[in-house]
Length: 328
Image (tube, rainbow, N blue to C red; front, side):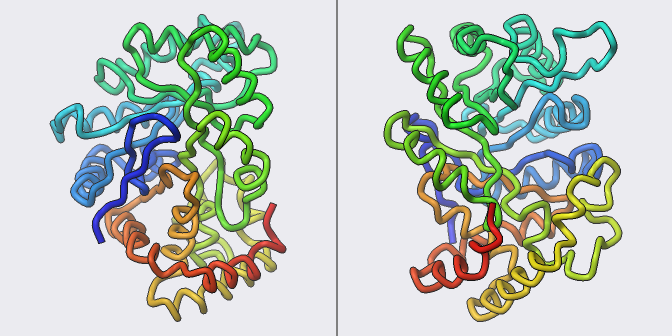
């Protein structure tokens, strides 16, 4: 099945329904050569959206993606690149304007840093990685607008903001004639659904917000590989990922994943492909951001495209019956 493309919310930008992100993998599990190989394979399969963030591997993720883009030499119109801002890079004691903020000083300089690391003249999409309660939202919105006016970015959005905060930012931009946020990047998978399906519901029609969702496999839980504990070399074993382990080893969640596995077998696909297709089935999802630490994993994930047509109302109802009681 050929790649499907969707508009990013109400914007005219079209994204591949499955995209490739770099969180956790780049630098930690994927070096320059592997990144180049996987990005080339993804592009050959029709993927045109590659997601990153300033904070991923403290800037190294952007450097690796930038080196891959330089090596691949694709026409700039052929791909979409994003980055995200809030956490900052410099955690030194007096660097108060370079961490956990969305103030104007930080944003204007942080985007410049990403452009240098990635070797690009502009980013297609920039996100406010988390809300900042200590910066007036109008200051953040104006800074994002100015970055677009200056040609350093083309679109902007949010990540893990509440519906109330997104609506406030959208209203400020609309009132002043500034560039409005057009996309939100939330966590969304079979076991984490409330925000996308309920809280954000008014935003889709009123603001035209699209979604580029992350963690479609619940950090690997929805592949079934954590049924017997934390396997060697998995994301759950990585340093700094301890916060994931309780959810990954939950007996109730792994039992639900086993039931999904039975359904996947009936459909002729893997549990992971079924879970990925489920996320993409939501029409408000512009792109499902996938991650991969090796080429075979990337290729397997992209096989979820062929599962989309198998998600009949009956199949969706069975998936809901298995997962909704455990979903947050």
